[in-house]
Length: 93
Length: 149
Image (cartoon, rainbow over all chains, first blue to last red; front, side):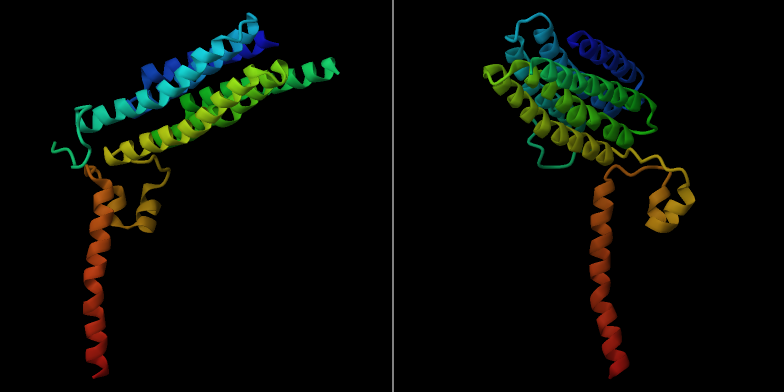
């Protein structure tokens, strides 16, 4: 039964990669990237169960914590052009 | 007893997998960024929730279940935060929502809705509009007082 779940997660992963490559704006790509991160977390957990090694869940927790930070970092970079920006003022452009 | 848990767990895992695929198909087929966010949030809540519930039934009351609960909690809180941040950044960058009938939407939302050249600060315009309305209010009151007196 874990094989079925793994296959479903892999199929959704492929579809999300298609959107990440196609996406007209950077935000579409970011949505796809965020969902790919979620899929990676679930894939790690399911594969851990599939192979009988639940230690994979620790890696999944780390990925879950990094996923949000990655998305917000890319958003901040495209808004201000600088990750060290204080974010207080509007960008000029 | 074990067979019941196995069947229930399989049903949960299968439903979770189906929702993951539905979410990915929705992300591909939806017309613009805001509706794609809606499709993507299905994977964060229903997909992840059902898959992890199925795995929790298999793991039983152990440390593994505690870790699964932790992953689920992180996903439940980080998913909406990331989605809100992406939607807000898209709006601030001037990405317009896709509408089927722009004229009707323009009638309902005011003339600014269907601007071709999109202003950079969409939110700023709303603030300006509120300020201009506030500026009008004392004038209206003065006119009323004049009519009374």
